[in-house]
Image: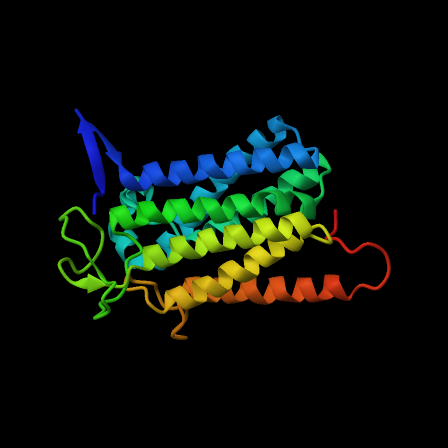
Length: 261
């Protein structure tokens, strides 16, 4: 693939950063359109967009560093080289949730309404961003004899090993992102309570992530000798929590069910 698209003097355009930025831009456009219909001003959407991109980068990078502590203790400055790849989506989701709960509470908005508003954007953003992973070679899969295996040959690629067919886990993740986007957009148009779209996004994404993790070939880090990677552990927690909340909300018999404001 092409980790580096082109260079002008000392400045290099990295494919990973380009597609992550493109994913955020497309997600922002989707949210602005949904926000107009939901009565959320474009100024608030832009403010939230800034908070989301910042917290997503920090959260996803922190989790990646935690999963690769042995490397970063030897190379601490590399923690900041995010243009080389190395962002864990689940960590980004956690970072966004924490910061957005603070923002929503501060401005007196509805948690469920705002979460629903951004769920499609997160899905389409990941779908596009994963193309950047494919171009950079990060988040690569295990060796495979399948006909759809991808061979990375660029010496600057983050995939390992080179010149060996690997599961195209980046494509798996991208396709799942596009599918989840279509599903949650459908749910959004028919939702019965605030928070329903975001809960289904969490359920679908966590389920897809648990399945795709089985084919990942990069070092995932093992959580306390459990045989489970940090990403799998977080995905299971998110899945259980989302399903539990959905069941509780749906079981309410009195009033219009919605997540707490």
